[in-house]
Image 1 (tube, rainbow, N blue to C red):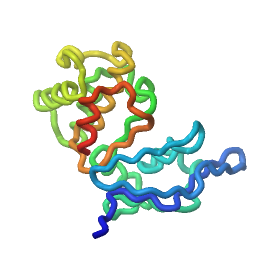
Image 2 (image 1 turned 120 degrees about the vertical axis):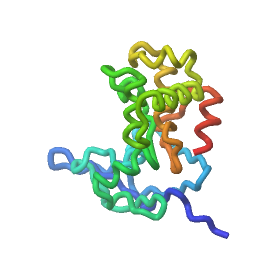
Image 3 (image 1 turned 135 degrees about the vertical axis):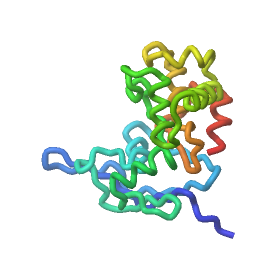
Length: 200
């Protein structure tokens, strides 16, 4: 019996326009991801792995970026045809991404508690003590020591490995029914992080 993939990318091409010139960055890539499955895109630097991952959530610099061909289907819905408002419901609730460099992805002006708390407020309606309890739970699960203290920390006060764990906690905070996308191999994460992420 054939199982319908949770995520299906078919013949996806990615083009960038700059100064009247178009560059084809990705030429007709296809792959499927089933529920509970981990899929890795492997290639040398500049081969289009990151822009392919960003395309899934429509995070490329449109309209400078475009898709001459292809479809991205998630749970039977064509993502590339969705409006920005529709995509906001998908991002975080169904699919989220752990970016390549946590220091540039985390807001340097906000504490860890505020940044994870914003996600919980937006997608789950959690505030106050309920949100704080959930944040501490997630930081503990990804291996952050003394999470109560770290709530008031700013990104620059954490090590690179800790910042990456915070990004994973943000990705997993909503108990996603879909997927999270890692824009690099998660080298610094503990085995606890890997086991937790493999359930998504």
